Amino acid sequence: MSELLLYGSYGYTGELIAEVATERGLDPTLAGRDERELTEQAAELNCEMAAFDLDDVDAVADRLADYDVVLNCAGPFVRTYEPMVEAALEAGTHYLDITGEIDVFEGVAGYDDRATEADVMLMSGVGFDVVPTDCLAAHLAERLPDATHLALAFKGLADISPGTMKTMLNYAGDGGYVRRDGLLESVPTAYRTRRIDFGSGERSAVTIPWGDVVTGYHTTGIPNIEVYMAAPEPAIWAMRGSRPLAPLLDVGPVKSTLQGLVDAAVSGPGERTRERGRGYVWGEVTDADGNRAVSRLETPETYKLTVESSLEIAERVLDGDAPAGYQTPAGAYGADLVLEIPGVEREDVV
Ligand SMILES: NC(=O)c1ccc[n+]([C@@H]2O[C@H](COP(=O)([O-])OP(=O)(O)OC[C@H]3O[C@@H](n4cnc5c(N)ncnc54)[C@H](OP(=O)(O)O)[C@@H]3O)[C@@H](O)[C@H]2O)c1
Image (cartoon, rainbow, N blue to C red; front, side, top):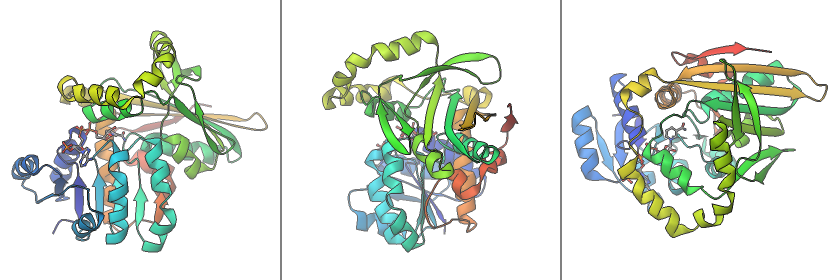
């Protein structure tokens, strides 16, 4: 009997994870709501399958009860996490997902007490968002224990998958978020810019609503957090110029029309891009005395890293290393977790 249930296994990212999990002998059960897709995939990978939707929590809990851990790849996760987490708690099954959505990190963290009581681990963000940034945040907090400000940045999202595009559209018009004095604060799109050296000279970068404004605080306790993404100046002007369009993008029918176009227009990075691409992560902490530390990571391409990091964590859980309650990747497994992934290098710059 397989111990790992992979939900959303026939989506772009789920499929990549399913293939590697099978190669590694993890024998995942492939799951999702489309029986036809699953039948085809299960035959191809020679895996068991389980077709079910998320409408009825008790029915989902019955399905999860046979497994040690569920890895949820069905995003946008704001539509799937609640029934899955409720069911995981009912079934006593550990829960992982690959979200990057701030609302979902907040939502899953809200189940902390119930998860602790049920002796279940809940961990969101086991992909590129947020494993490398969370591990870098933890490393920097170890280097400067009294840090009051944390800035994180990444470069490398050259090509994105359909689900990532739909998830981004879901939040289009919502502006951004930073953490200030311990609280999440809503800020305009492209709120701040700065020049960042990811290792090959300075680049422009702009604030984006990335999961670390939640997870970085849980992991390090640093009360002020901003996350930046490298972007060319014209893209930053365009982001700022789009602010007046925010109310339009926030209209349900506009979002659903745009999301409907995604499957036809977006296919995700091909194998060559995944094999050759690299991700770059930068982090800086400062304290009240003006001390500063800067470190960087270079990683495999973002989807390749997501496959590796999610399976590294799933394997730890299957080995019994699953502290109860809401956990962040580096909170549970330490700053060096990311260094277990082949092709990741870390450098202390300042
Ligand atoms: N953390 C990271 O770094 C990272 C990396 C990669 C992806 N992601 C995130 O992962 C998600 C998936 O991305 P993707 O490109 O793989 O997406 P995708 O190709 O569109 O696949 C999405 C999968 O989720 C399922 N799904 C969606 N809504 C569902 C619902 N309400 N109930 C049941 N199943 C549902 C889909 O099944 P149906 O076809 O039946 O709808 C499909 O199997 C996105 O939110 C993306 O942002 C995060």
